[in-house]
Length: 310
Image 1 (tube, rainbow, N blue to C red):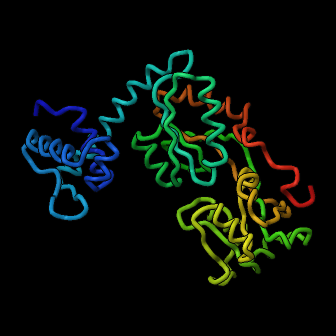
Image 2: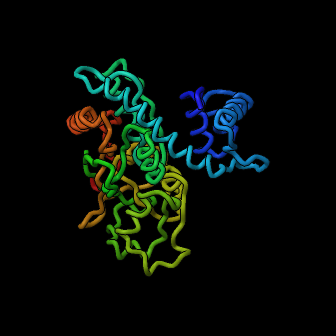
Image 3: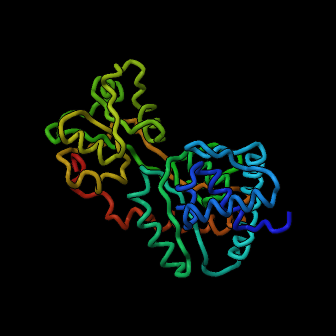
């Protein structure tokens, strides 16, 4: 089996992950025919088929499934060799792959990149926005170096480092400004707008509202916080958004924002990374830096007039 290269393994791993020649080729930065040639060459070197052809979606053979798992392990180990070099004192260099969930990324990521870039000018920052479930999977498979998520994630293989807590804010039509703030029981009587399934913020909002008695028609979904806030501005219902999102999402919407009654719902935002990562000491330093220089401040914080009663 001499002749198998890291290129073969990287291309095959991408194909196994995307399950599609076109998307895998795009992820690898090569043409689809070139990827096909590389896969045929790998199969020739192994002397057995890896892929079941003839279907719209790529299916792996039994050998292909086994090789995909081993390829991920090998590629992760090779990538971690480079991470070992970056554990030395001084500024971080090379590639740093960051995953951030959608309800944090637009409001936190710009400041995060600015802070990291200023202190590590040779750093090649590769950010990606994705939901928590996929982020955890990508961390485990070595496709990300760390993630910024709502804690806890409770994964034994991942280290969690809290950065800050923030409240959930109630967004309601501008005409409701000055009205009494509803309790969690009161919210169950309203039409509540929520993110689609798969977003952890949806689950956190539902946990506060305890919607067991809410009729299905009273729950409506949106694909983003921006969509939810605009729907509120159109008079469709009310929603909850994280405090860091208030300046951005309410800027052009005809809404009012208010703190909820005690006990106020909140979430903990933090970093997660593999416990086995050679970068762990440097990631701890990054977490400490972020706690001392909150990237949210680069967005201007909450506007003084953005919240009822301020």
